[in-house]
Length: 113
Length: 115
Image (cartoon, rainbow over all chains, first blue to last red; front, side, top):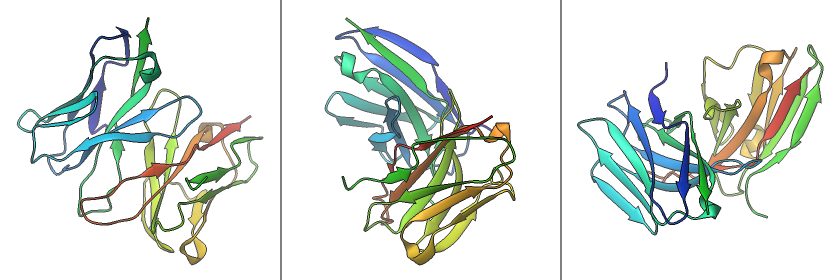
């Protein structure tokens, strides 16, 4: 059972543009939503995370938008740079449980000059 | 380097052989997780430890898989009688569990190829 659906599978954005990746979840018990960035040959690294008590969180060029009623959240990368080219995973977990993360299937982002 | 360390980085084995992977977490972290990642997919949870206690195992973890964390430090993941379907990246992650501040740090993984 895939509990976190992620789209698109791949994304090409011009340098300086906005990259947008979307995720939808099914389990209403989820209450922690991180985004991870993974480069080839490396493990995922936490980028930014949000909890459902806020609708938006911004850290530098990265913003998470969260819509609790729609059970959706998205990652926006402003002023996208070639160094942002990587695979991005959304994830979700239930705090107060074992905190294990359920990941989406990933979005391969390519920033072109 | 004080990050999560995994060894080996790559392992090629023949079907039916046993393999063992090691994970050294960040030293002060009391939680350790194992995930499996196949090509084009997100990591899938396998099991986790709090200190030396194994608190949960996924249904993905068949009886051919066993994980240990003696003394609550490093962990090993053993796969017995490997099958071609076991080919994947095995990721280890660690964290310090404190309410509302959980952050998982992943290692670079062990890439297993079963021929």
